[in-house]
Image (cartoon, rainbow, N blue to C red):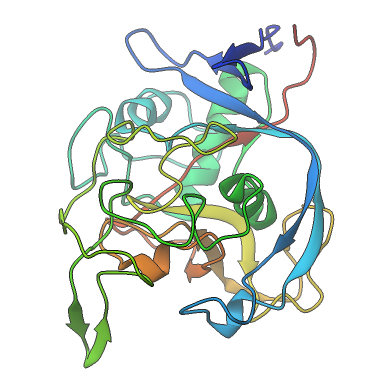
Amino acid sequence: MQAQAVTINKRQGQNQYYEEPIASGVRPLEMMRIPAGTFLMGSPEDELKRIDRGGPQHEVRVPQFFMAKYSVTQAQWRAVAEMSPVERKLKIDPSRFKGADRPVERVSWEDAVEFCARLSAHTGRPYRLPSEAEWEYACRAGTTTPFHFGETITTDLANYCGQDRTINKTKYSGSYGDGPKGEYREETTPVDHFDIANAFGLCDMHGNVLEWCQDILHDSYEGAPTDGSAWMTYGDDEYHILRGGSWDFNPRACRSARRDYAQPGNRDTTIGFRVVSAPPGSIT
């Protein structure tokens, strides 16, 4: 299918985006322009609750791309899941927490890749999962703090577990640094529940659902690409990277630099995804 020209709009005088229609009555994908730039990927050694897998920090140059403002919703998922398969079948309604504008969850990495393939075939534009570098660069949006909000986070800003818990004899705090404790909603929220965007116009980058990235797992960033591309070689190909934390995670797991992982066939109520694109053809 030939891609139709996309019109770049401006939001609040600074964020540029285009809308990708999927189906009648379904929220279009709002694809935010993420400008090219260089950033320090990973967490500094003195960041609170840092783990070794989040380092060493290294400079990465990221080319321009477009990223969806929100995680893929259940309505968007259903519309694409009803399209013709490319490589594999998809469940029409996999999520536990039902709601058209809630993020789709219980989707595997393989499912997310199939979604992108079907969306690409439908629109004529190349959609895919973000590389891990693209995800962190887009999440940070020029910040160097643990969260794009700043040094800490609250449950008024994001959906995560704001209560202290002990799991398998390990204690997890409901607060981060000097931040307060808060709610534990015990479920996802609609993707626009908070609608507090970072400087690139992206929402829900901390909490709600983990998001699949292209990359396979490596124990550190030693030898990682520095051009923003996905790291797909010489790692543990039984696992793929997840980013962003979730509704069931404590705040330390929702940091911009936090790296989680799962097997590519894993489906869990904490896991969703968002898409990226580099539209070809005419952009006005």
